[in-house]
Image 1 (cartoon, rainbow, N blue to C red):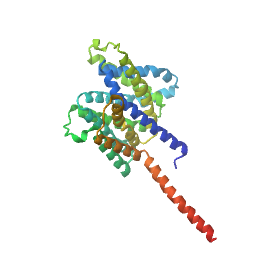
Image 2 (cartoon, rainbow, N blue to C red):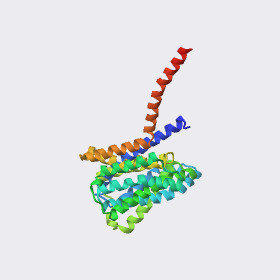
Image 3 (spheres, rainbow, N blue to C red):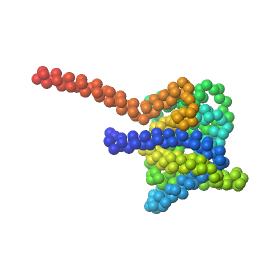
Image 4 (cartoon, rainbow, N blue to C red):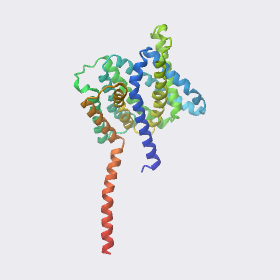
Length: 322
């Protein structure tokens, strides 16, 4: 029986993941603006290493045991996160935005596969239906359903990123069970490793003149937004929630990222959503509604509300007969 405190923790984790999906959905437009001023690898190195420097004082306050646990859990995850960002960044450059928005949502069906392989948890029929609904919604939202897509290298890189996302979500849960680490300590190790990888790649593949820091205020405003919300908050929230929720549910909530990206385009950039996109958004919300446990709670509440009057009537009749 789940206690009230554990229920509260799970709802808090789900709300945090929704906030992560929201800020990550906005990150595409913000990153696109910043990349007008700086190379991709250099920009990613700045984003991660600035985050690392900001958080390092907090990491040094941890005990030696907590730092060791953070290294053990964060090292493999940091390498995987660097690979995800590389696949996503170069994949988006070589495919259409609609293909990328849909294909990244393939982490939804990938996640229960790794949950079964790494955690031994079989997928339920309800979860399978909700995940299928979410993938269909993503196809409608992105416009992928109207295309005959011949997968190119960019598409394959996005699929690889989706696969790696599913592995990270599930592996975070598994490592939290064997080598639990503080969520903030885990975040610091992850961004430090990812930042170092990006820095090495930047200096070995980009002419040094192109790595001179830009003077544009808009670049630094966008970078600060990405550091504070899309990296520090988002990585901490994801690490904290992923150690407390089933991976399939984490993937479903994070899968709303394209939806929030579309909303950001409408509200901030003046874009419009087609009827099929609105339908897709609705399907994705229904899928998350089912996977998050909200649907079950409401059905249980409706059932109890119907049963209570019947019990009262039965009790009244029994009292009257006595």
